[in-house]
Image 1 (cartoon, one colour):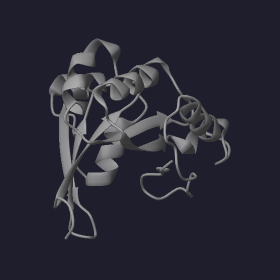
Image 2 (cartoon, one colour):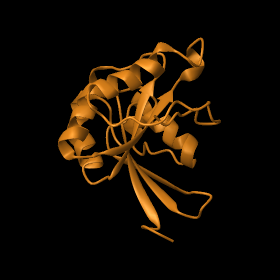
Image 3 (spheres, one colour):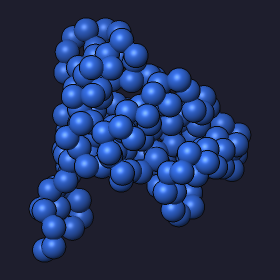
Length: 161
Protein backbone atom coordinates (compact mmCIF):
# COMPACT_ATOMS: atom_id res chain seq x y z
CA UNK A 1 0.00 0.00 0.00
CA UNK A 2 1.47 3.35 -1.04
CA UNK A 3 1.67 6.11 1.54
CA UNK A 4 0.90 5.96 5.21
CA UNK A 5 -1.74 3.53 6.43
CA UNK A 6 -3.52 6.32 8.28
CA UNK A 7 -4.29 9.99 7.70
CA UNK A 8 -5.15 12.88 9.99
CA UNK A 9 -7.74 15.42 8.92
CA UNK A 10 -8.56 18.59 10.86
CA UNK A 11 -11.85 20.44 10.60
CA UNK A 12 -12.09 24.18 10.00
CA UNK A 13 -14.92 26.66 9.59
CA UNK A 14 -17.25 29.14 11.24
CA UNK A 15 -18.90 28.40 14.57
CA UNK A 16 -22.20 26.47 14.32
CA UNK A 17 -21.69 25.33 10.74
CA UNK A 18 -21.81 21.67 11.75
CA UNK A 19 -18.17 20.54 12.04
CA UNK A 20 -18.76 18.27 15.04
CA UNK A 21 -22.06 16.95 13.66
CA UNK A 22 -20.35 16.06 10.40
CA UNK A 23 -17.63 14.16 12.29
CA UNK A 24 -20.29 12.24 14.22
CA UNK A 25 -21.98 11.32 10.93
CA UNK A 26 -18.71 10.22 9.34
CA UNK A 27 -17.34 8.24 12.28
CA UNK A 28 -20.12 7.57 14.79
CA UNK A 29 -17.93 9.22 17.44
CA UNK A 30 -18.90 12.49 19.13
CA UNK A 31 -15.75 14.63 19.30
CA UNK A 32 -17.25 16.97 21.91
CA UNK A 33 -16.06 15.33 25.12
CA UNK A 34 -16.66 17.88 27.85
CA UNK A 35 -19.91 18.45 29.74
CA UNK A 36 -19.57 22.19 29.09
CA UNK A 37 -19.43 21.55 25.33
CA UNK A 38 -22.58 19.45 25.52
CA UNK A 39 -24.36 22.02 27.68
CA UNK A 40 -23.47 24.93 25.39
CA UNK A 41 -23.70 23.04 22.10
CA UNK A 42 -20.32 24.52 21.23
CA UNK A 43 -16.89 22.97 20.70
CA UNK A 44 -14.40 24.45 23.15
CA UNK A 45 -11.48 22.04 23.11
CA UNK A 46 -10.02 19.78 20.46
CA UNK A 47 -12.03 16.65 19.85
CA UNK A 48 -10.92 13.39 18.26
CA UNK A 49 -12.62 10.70 16.21
CA UNK A 50 -11.54 8.05 13.75
CA UNK A 51 -12.83 5.50 11.29
CA UNK A 52 -11.64 2.92 8.78
CA UNK A 53 -12.30 3.52 5.11
CA UNK A 54 -13.51 0.70 2.85
CA UNK A 55 -9.89 0.38 1.65
CA UNK A 56 -8.82 -0.44 5.21
CA UNK A 57 -6.92 2.83 5.56
CA UNK A 58 -7.60 4.55 8.88
CA UNK A 59 -8.52 8.21 9.10
CA UNK A 60 -8.30 10.27 12.26
CA UNK A 61 -10.17 13.54 12.68
CA UNK A 62 -9.24 16.50 14.87
CA UNK A 63 -12.36 18.59 15.42
CA UNK A 64 -11.50 22.21 16.20
CA UNK A 65 -13.57 25.01 17.72
CA UNK A 66 -15.02 27.55 15.31
CA UNK A 67 -15.65 30.35 17.79
CA UNK A 68 -13.17 33.23 17.74
CA UNK A 69 -12.63 32.99 21.52
CA UNK A 70 -11.12 29.53 21.09
CA UNK A 71 -8.76 30.33 18.21
CA UNK A 72 -5.72 29.05 20.14
CA UNK A 73 -7.29 25.62 20.32
CA UNK A 74 -8.12 25.81 16.62
CA UNK A 75 -4.46 26.57 15.88
CA UNK A 76 -3.30 23.63 17.97
CA UNK A 77 -5.62 21.30 16.07
CA UNK A 78 -4.95 22.34 12.49
CA UNK A 79 -1.24 23.05 12.85
CA UNK A 80 0.06 19.50 12.43
CA UNK A 81 -2.70 18.25 10.11
CA UNK A 82 -1.77 17.89 6.44
CA UNK A 83 -5.40 17.93 5.28
CA UNK A 84 -8.42 20.00 6.28
CA UNK A 85 -12.14 19.30 6.09
CA UNK A 86 -13.46 22.85 5.66
CA UNK A 87 -17.11 23.05 6.70
CA UNK A 88 -19.49 25.71 5.38
CA UNK A 89 -23.21 25.76 6.18
CA UNK A 90 -25.34 26.06 3.03
CA UNK A 91 -27.91 28.23 4.78
CA UNK A 92 -25.36 30.78 6.03
CA UNK A 93 -22.49 30.64 3.56
CA UNK A 94 -19.08 32.19 4.14
CA UNK A 95 -18.80 33.91 7.54
CA UNK A 96 -16.11 35.79 9.52
CA UNK A 97 -14.58 32.71 11.14
CA UNK A 98 -14.62 30.93 7.78
CA UNK A 99 -12.37 33.68 6.47
CA UNK A 100 -10.21 33.67 9.61
CA UNK A 101 -9.77 29.90 9.47
CA UNK A 102 -8.82 30.02 5.78
CA UNK A 103 -6.24 32.72 6.47
CA UNK A 104 -4.78 30.61 9.30
CA UNK A 105 -4.59 27.58 6.99
CA UNK A 106 -2.78 29.73 4.42
CA UNK A 107 -0.24 30.91 7.00
CA UNK A 108 0.31 27.36 8.26
CA UNK A 109 0.82 26.09 4.73
CA UNK A 110 -2.07 23.62 4.77
CA UNK A 111 -2.58 23.12 1.06
CA UNK A 112 -4.92 20.14 0.82
CA UNK A 113 -8.55 20.04 1.78
CA UNK A 114 -12.11 19.18 1.06
CA UNK A 115 -14.99 21.63 1.42
CA UNK A 116 -18.06 20.06 3.01
CA UNK A 117 -21.29 21.94 2.54
CA UNK A 118 -23.52 21.16 5.49
CA UNK A 119 -27.15 21.98 6.28
CA UNK A 120 -28.14 21.54 2.64
CA UNK A 121 -31.55 20.38 3.82
CA UNK A 122 -32.19 23.99 4.88
CA UNK A 123 -31.83 25.45 1.38
CA UNK A 124 -34.29 25.26 -1.51
CA UNK A 125 -32.17 23.69 -4.23
CA UNK A 126 -28.83 21.95 -4.63
CA UNK A 127 -27.47 24.71 -6.87
CA UNK A 128 -27.77 27.21 -4.04
CA UNK A 129 -25.65 30.37 -4.52
CA UNK A 130 -23.43 29.25 -1.64
CA UNK A 131 -22.13 26.32 -3.68
CA UNK A 132 -21.11 28.28 -6.76
CA UNK A 133 -20.17 31.40 -4.81
CA UNK A 134 -17.84 29.49 -2.52
CA UNK A 135 -15.97 27.91 -5.43
CA UNK A 136 -15.62 31.32 -7.13
CA UNK A 137 -14.53 32.94 -3.87
CA UNK A 138 -11.78 30.38 -3.27
CA UNK A 139 -10.61 30.60 -6.88
CA UNK A 140 -10.51 34.42 -6.62
CA UNK A 141 -8.24 34.03 -3.59
CA UNK A 142 -5.88 31.96 -5.74
CA UNK A 143 -6.83 28.74 -3.97
CA UNK A 144 -6.37 25.70 -6.19
CA UNK A 145 -9.98 24.61 -6.49
CA UNK A 146 -10.47 21.56 -8.66
CA UNK A 147 -13.53 19.51 -9.34
CA UNK A 148 -17.20 20.27 -9.24
CA UNK A 149 -19.76 19.78 -6.53
CA UNK A 150 -20.99 16.21 -6.54
CA UNK A 151 -24.46 15.01 -5.78
CA UNK A 152 -25.33 14.90 -2.09
CA UNK A 153 -24.16 11.74 -0.39
CA UNK A 154 -26.03 10.34 2.56
CA UNK A 155 -25.62 10.62 5.45
CA UNK A 156 -23.07 13.43 5.30
CA UNK A 157 -24.29 15.47 2.33
CA UNK A 158 -20.75 16.70 1.70
CA UNK A 159 -19.37 18.02 -1.58
CA UNK A 160 -15.68 17.92 -2.44
CA UNK A 161 -14.68 21.01 -4.39
